Image 1 (cartoon, one colour):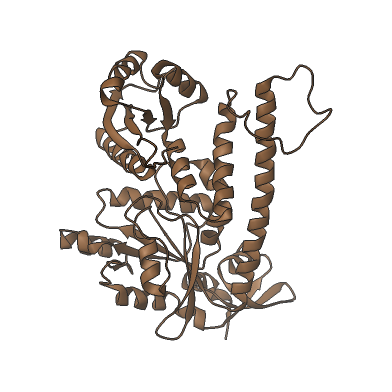
Image 2: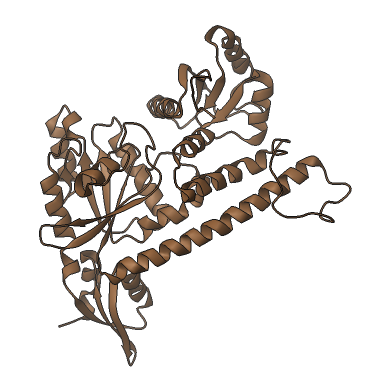
Length: 423
């Protein structure tokens, strides 16, 4: 979509945001700044940013029609090729705007999907992003899918009264079903790989964080991996798992995951479930935060929101404040470390503080070197399920109305299981 080459002129885009009731000017500005970064990551040059104050979006054009016509008047002078809206547009709004503006109209979701399409390298990544794109575009079909070949059907499958739009919609639905089947195979394959790792009884730490927080740089530093680490949003999409040995000889598997984002499209989370399951199945989350970012708290909350949606929010978590070499006020570092007890501050680029991080990681995973035995009443089914979900069960058998469990469990769960511990 925004892909550039010597033979193709670079896209020139105008960004549009809406100052609605309940949204402060600061929030809108930060959201548009991030949209500008996304557009640049996709390969576009942003020539202007336009905002309008409305109580709520208008049904036909999202912004006012008069405002849209004023924006159109500036196209020729600025050689505008694309108009990008900060929020998701309805199918009708997108269609009306393209007819009015006579330019390519995108919203934030389409822009993110386009970046993912550019970055995906593995077969799994390509399947996931194609599925997300089709799920997003299905309700927006307006005779734009006649180029797709039919995956199924044939003689007798098309009624005499069926329109071309219905044919196109069915082709997309068939393609979505095929992609979902293929990704289900990927998910099963990943589950088998995880079971193989569990047999080694090595804890798995998943590196999560806002996009461009420095996750891949940290993984490269600790494990010598060769993951692409660039100063741009969504530099890497495909998960990477590498083994790392702590000073006490404890082996741990570190997994780098796709970066999170405010307003991360739900279709994207659904499509990347096979990848994001690495987060839900991890024994420890390493939450990397760019401490030099202007909206640190918002970024932390955005990551927490996604982990909540994935059902991984209550997992044992090590907070890592990165890019301290770019922080001008040292008191800011102390303030966040005091606020998040047990956190560490590092620079993954220079290596500063990494030895402290390794020690903190060793402390967090100390319980994985200890075998614990518990006698849990069968009535505590949710607790038994949590042992399976967040620990490594080495042995399980039943004695009367109790489950006797031998397992490695993280510290937080050990506290819960304290009343049921057996020497």
